[in-house]
Structures are given as C-alpha cells and as structure tokens.
Amino acid sequence: MESETLDLAIFVQSDSFGGTERHTVELLNHIDEKGLKSAFLYCGEGFNGRVPENFSSLKSLKVVSKVRKLTIKDIMIWRKVFKGSNAKKALLIKPSYFSLDLKFLFLLRLHYKDLVVIEHSLPAKRLHLPKIGFIPKFGWWRLKDETFRFLFAKLIDKVIVVSEIAKTESINHTYYKDINVCGNGINTKAWVRDKNKGADFRSENGIDKDLYIFGCVGNLFKVKSFDIAIQALSLLSEKYRRQCGLCVVGVGLEYENLKALVEDLNLENVFFLGKKSDMVAAYSAMQTLLITSISESASLALLEATACDCNILSSDVGICKEVISEMQNGIVIDSHDPKVWANKIEAHLEQNKNDGDPLRFSRKSKFEEKYDIKKRMSSLLETIMMND
Image (tube, rainbow, N blue to C red; front, side, top):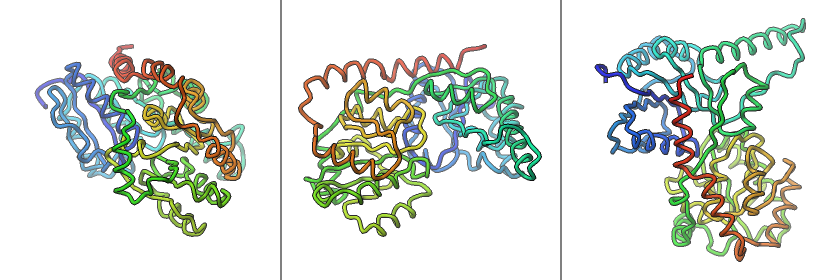
C-alpha cells in the first residue's frame, strides 16, 4: 500500500453495528464494484467480523487506536497508518460532528489534500445563549463551543448529509460551507419480509408466536428515547398489554437503565435482544416498528422495516413523516409523552391493519424505485469523488 497512491482512504470509528454501519458496508461494496483503489481503516468493535473479505480493489485494516482524546501513542499509530495509505482523498464517516478530537482532524489534514465527511446524524444545537456575554463560565463556554465548531468546519473540505433536514440544521448550527445532500437507500431485494425467518426468530428468543410484537431498533442511547416505548406499554390497559410485546434490538449505554425501568414497571414480554446479525429475521418477527427518537436525520431502520412490511409508529423526526405518508403504513406521533404513545398504540392494536392493504404493492414499487441502493450509492460516490 505504501508504494501506490490510492483513490480513496476511508476512516470510521464505531463500537456498534447498526444502520449507519450497514450503509457503510454497502458503500464499500459499491466502491469495490467500481474498481476504485481504496483502503478502509476502522477502529472500535462495531465492524468486527462484518467487513467482507472478497474485495478486489479495496483493502481493509482494523486500527488499534481511537479518534477521541488522542494520546501520543495514538498519534504515532495514526501517522503510521496514514503513511501506509497514501491517497488522493480521505473520507471520514460518522464523526458525529464535534465529538471528534481536533488533533485527529489536524493529522488527517496534514496527510490528505481533500477531506470529505459523511454525517448520518443531526448536529448538536448551539448553546441557548444569544451571544457571548459577561456571565461567568457561560460566556467562556459559549466562546469555546463556537471556536471548536469553527475550527472543525475549517479543517473539512466537503460535508455530505443524508437529508434536507440535516442540511438545514447544519446551516443553522455549524460553520460548514459546502453541504451536499445524498439520501440513504437500501437493497430492497435483500430487505424482504420472510415469515419463516420471523417464526424462527421468535422461537429462538422465547417470544410467543401469537404476541403482537412492537420493535425498537438502534443504539441504546438517550436520543433514541426507547424508555418512552417501555413506559407506554406499562400504561396500556390490561386487555391490550396481554396482546403485545416489545423487542429491543441494539446495544449501548442505556441498556442498564432501560432494563431497570422494565423491572420497576413490572413489565412482561419486553425482550432485550442485543446485537442481531440477521435484521431481516428481526423485522420479520415484528408487526410494528416504534421510532421514539427525539432526533433523526434519515433513519435506516425506518427504510429497512418498511421494506420488510412493518407498520411504523414514529415521532416527527427526520424523513419519517415523508416515508409514512408515501407508504401509508403508520402514523406520526407529534409528542414524546408516554400517555399519548399508549393511546396511539391501543388505537393501532384495535385497528390492526398490518395485512390486507391492496394498495401496498403499488406504493412499495414506488418506494423501491425511490430508495434503490444502487442509485443512491452511485450519487453518493460521485459526490465524494467530485473535485470542487
């Protein structure tokens, strides 16, 4: 790798494997199909065992380091990695805006002429202060925050976001100048409901075959607000509570808190399933996906579950309203009050219209056309490699 100049060096840090990571693997496959000489350099535990081994033009390497709070040892490791992956352009995936160490960005900037970032989430909002003032600590805190955002943006040449909402939020809360929108897509041929897989999934995880299953899918972080779904289930009347269960698929910092909440509420039929390699089986075991997030850009779980014929109950975040309106496969709940969610869940169970919709097929054809992975990846790769 040292002797040749690559077309692209791709960097990502992840400790879980969710929608963003699945999207990244699709991007790697597309890059390899196009024959671009590339290096995929990842750290963290998220991609362990998940990176295909049959690439022809793309080489992958796990880096035993991190991208936050860099030590001298980390800096030396990354300098060696950069030296061994000489490329025309560097792509940084999912740095979560300002959670990245500026030292890491400076290192990238020293070794690569062009630096492109893909953000799958929304930026943190600016501090709620009208201007830098004279209030002790708060004035300095705001100045420090604004300085960091400014430097972060100056070190990056191009930003790619996955929705128009994310672009608007980035304009309002960052100093980014070159913001491009490339929407998410999925492989609709792979994401298809499979009743047999769904039945096996239930059996393997001790889920009664007759329960109506709601699902929460994603990293167990506060922003996902899965506690709303759990509290809503506890507020259902006895009649409806006996009919349904909740599968929580994912790992993260909120696991212990969510588990404790289930125990405090004395809830049955709540299943914490951790990471699952076969998400088609997971969606096929569910009837309805619950998206309780307080912030989303372009949820891949939404697209995956929709392709697998799940209904959707979602808060008004990201592209959820757009997709639900197109597919007419659920409702948007403009509240994060568990009581409101409980009422909507009861109404949904009463209606129970998951099957028998004669218009679903024609709408699904439009869905497949709009969110086709090959079209989306072609547009994304073209934007990444475009020279400004």
